[in-house]
Image 1 (spheres, rainbow, N blue to C red):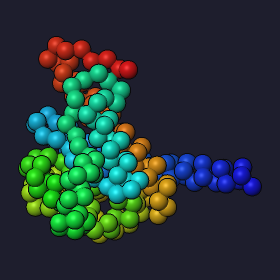
Image 2: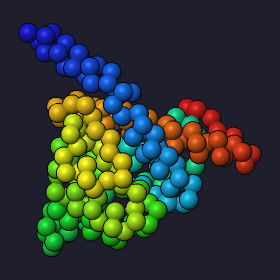
Image 3: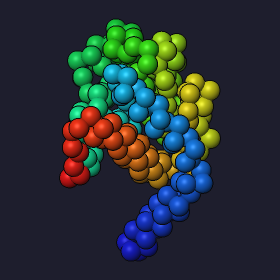
Image 4: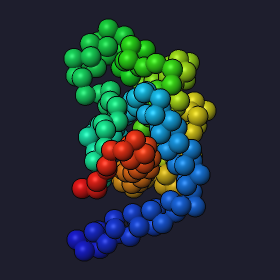
Length: 202
């Protein structure tokens, strides 16, 4: 029985990942170009999510700020849930639906990229963050699951996993995030090399 459960999870993940190129490559390319343009222009990326998606947001922000595979300059990225004092004070004073939008108002500027992650596409605080980001002139990227939920109407580009299962969607989001980071990293490395500074892979 245990073997069957494990096999089912692996096979299900493989099936979803196999649809990635067909389902989302054009949207991923648009998102990658937006991130590259922001970093080249001295702007930053703001990631936000709840629960497992918060962990994904923190993971991906760290990949950009630290490094993914290539030694290069740090790419400015923040995960907005990591300041617990800010999150809890905003939730207490304004309501949990504003924990990201309030931070975006204070930290975001036009030309930044806001990346909202929600497997359902309907998390109120993610939607409010994307709504405010769009109003402020940030480029908005949504990572979600099948259908896109209400997020679909709020973002400049939607990357929706072809699955309605939360575990498969979250696994897929990390693959997408890693691919976006690799694309941005290599673009920055090329620009750095053109200025006479070497870049190496770890």
